[in-house]
Image 1: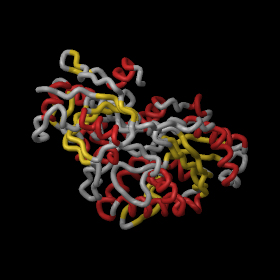
Image 2: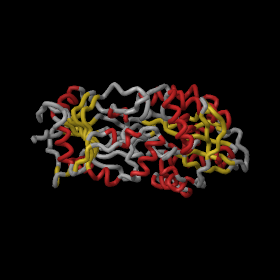
Image 3: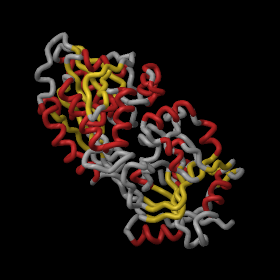
Image 4: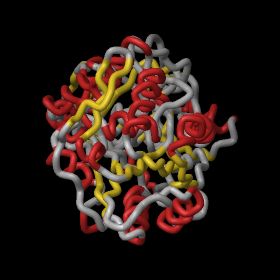
Amino acid sequence: MELPHLQLIDQGFVPGSRLDARRGTLEELARAGLLGGVQPGQTVLVTAGSRGVDCMAEVLGAVVAAVKQKGAKPVILPAMGSHGGGTAAGQIAVLEHLGQTPETLGAPIHDRVEPVEIGEVEGCPVYADRAAVEADHILIVNRVKEHTEFIGEIESGLLKMAVVGLGRVAGAEVMHQLAVRISYVKAIQAIARVLFQKLPIRGGVAILEDKTNTVRRLEAVPAADVFEREPQLLAEARQHHASLPFDQLDVLLVDEIGKDISGAGFDTKVIGRIMNIYEKECERPRITRIVLRDLSGRTGGNAIGLGLADYVHRRVVDKMDAAMTALNCITAVAPEKARIPIVQDSDRQALEAAFRSIGLWNAQSVRLAWIINTSDLRQLAVSPALAAEARAKGLAVAAESFALPFHSDDLMSLRQVFKMTGAG
């Protein structure tokens, strides 16, 4: 099989000047008056999620410092639904992988999971961790961005963090089960309203990033404004969401997926596959076949999202923690995302199988793109047909082409290719 040569393209994503996240957080907390009612000796619970947000440790550290300045006692709550196996120890380990420890953040991390029923909505119980129920104040910290499971006026942000973060595993399960009945947006909003009414939530700090996953700006939002403000923040975030520069692909080759990359392993909005039977599908891009090569080093064996691919290298399945992946997918009411695609013993076999299932093609006409993962889209490698399209769109296209870098039928990583060519 004659595989196409590839060329590197650059989408020209340039990060803005590095924002001082610590200073920005302190300024926003003061501007919004989020700590105005905090008294010395009181406990302030601060949420910490499981995503790989570059500035999260700085933001959390600043919130902790501001709380201490008030003479209050900050406590970090691992707020990540069923991630980390749904256990206290597992979720603390997730934070450690992200560099978030009592030492780096300056505050203790809550080490128990104790769901407490605090209300009801649509016949379903509403849960919050006992730490949230007993805290004097709560501050929610999260990135506002598009969600991997649905499309709506609110997606991933402060409200979802309240529901699956403060609710922990039990809260995540109820939210996803209710979503099957009434949709994600309505489920999150309904449960969040109970939480905001019943718990001492003072508000939250929203993190907004640019297309390079670099923090672009921060905004502190008082609790009374969150429901109105979050849709506006999401609309802003959508304008800065990275995507593939093509609406149609024959084959997408992906080096890695992971929970640190996206909640569904892949960013579903990037690949155009949500695969959620009770939510609307993406209209674009349209990708005929997806080939997955590996899991990220920080996903801890959680292989949620492998079901979104069509072919996977055997190493993906070998590295998968089946129990952890199952728990995450069952909690998220998304068993489709744990389905195991066709497994191949090498990258060459996986790619050739993909090419055999896309219809008629040749090396010049096939539309193949190769990416590191769905959160790193500044540079990618593409086949001649896509290189020509990229050039027509004004994107930078490398003059030199190269053969797919196989060694014993497996590829080097795209990161290695960038390093070798000096493009990284």
